[in-house]
Length: 135
Image 1 (tube, one colour):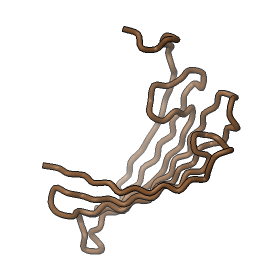
Image 2 (tube, rainbow, N blue to C red):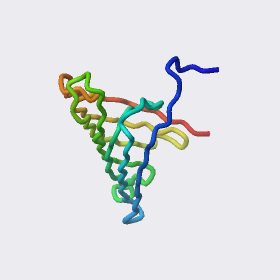
Image 3 (cartoon, rainbow, N blue to C red):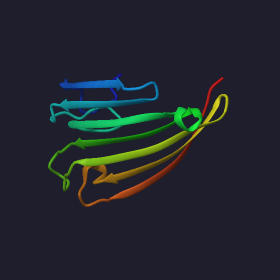
């Protein structure tokens, strides 16, 4: 059955990414992606072009080998001419700590400039607490 009342169209997209581990505890990543900018995407975060970079450091050096601190940023672009469009820029900082084997807790801070690609919004400060369990 067709859940899109306007039908489906082909969307051309592409991307390139890298991950590089520099030491046993530290690595970085980067990603460039590009879409054709003409067709709506079926994804959580809409964008036509984006660049992301970041890194993560495991807690071996401060005696917490199962913990990780990370920093990443993403600049995304989208437009349809109806909003006061500007690139959406979100930077995230997190600390993920092993509480007990099988349970991790993470505190997270995100700073969003032009959320929703709209220059009339933001900046916005977002805070989160996450839990992850594994059996």
